[in-house]
Length: 270
Ligand SMILES: Nc1ncnc2c1ncn2[C@@H]1O[C@H](COP(=O)(O)OP(=O)(O)OP(=O)(O)O)[C@@H](O)[C@H]1O
Ligand SMILES: [Mg+2]
Image (cartoon, rainbow, N blue to C red; front, top):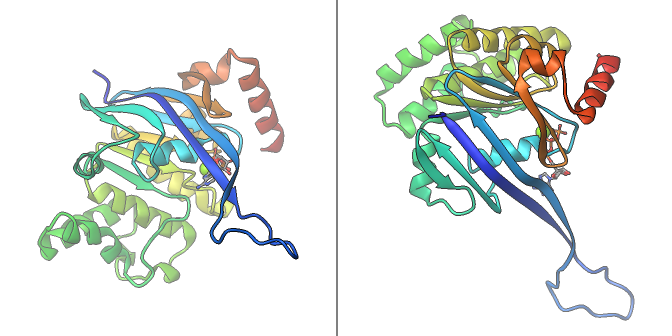
């Protein structure tokens, strides 16, 4: 049985604009007009096995972030099914209890770290343990220190985010994700907000997690990571999965013309 199976995920965004006020013309207050529907996900299927590191590639706007957000209910899909450890959730209408139960097994690392600015590195890591999981502070601190050690930041436990580099902040965010002891971690472009010299330290931590068998779903533009660390690569475009294959196969022998074109373009800009 696969750890995570998602089927037929659909998501559209509607953009509304208020009718412009024109001289002499009165509009009903609050009148809204739907101007367009943007279909961002158009039937995405994906399977993740325990221990898989799945890299999701795709051009800007292809729906990668939206997909990850739907999987963790940060965004409500219009349709779709998610099966995790054999339990199936309806992505369009799961209950709060379902969502809470699923989130206990998952963690999310954002592009922009999302740390609390007024909390130290350690407090950022332990916050969820103390508040959501009701862990006694001493125990949470011990877990937190262990996780900071894992990402190489034990000596920065008492620093505030503004005293840390971007790479260090992202490593704190990874330590926070690890502290909740997740079965899978979703990463959304974890290095794309970083200066090139800082991406290496974050990728090294992710590589170490991969080697330890952590299951990860990683949206990334880092071709080196996709090629050398991930076990499986998925190429998305226009809200659908165009191609997915074991990474060595994906890069050595892409089957779809669109994938080849994407890889050629990337090769030119790297
Ligand atoms: N909350 C929203 N409201 C309206 N449109 C949205 C919203 N979120 C995303 N979109 C649109 O959905 C499309 C897909 O966005 P998404 O962020 O999922 O793309 P992406 O593949 O992650 O792109 P990138 O590589 O630039 O991060 C884009 O056209 C975006 O403008
Ligand atoms: Mg994105």
